[in-house]
Amino acid sequence: MQRQLGRLPAQLAERPACPAELAYLAEWLGQLPTPLTHTELHHWTQLTARRLDRWEVEALMMLDRIRSDG
Image (cartoon, rainbow, N blue to C red):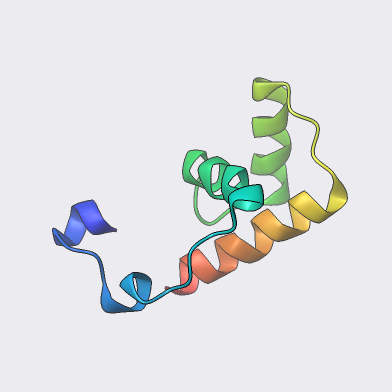
């Protein structure tokens, strides 16, 4: 979004920092399409040989909903 606008939107500039322990989820989300489906996520895990815990899947789906509504 910052690349498209040439600046960071105010809502994003004011957001709290992502905890370091969860930064990998933000990195993964950047590699995934939007809107994200469970099928797309499944194929991504197969291609990247990642095994996600259920809570990680739920977190990525929730973050994508937020990203899509943004």
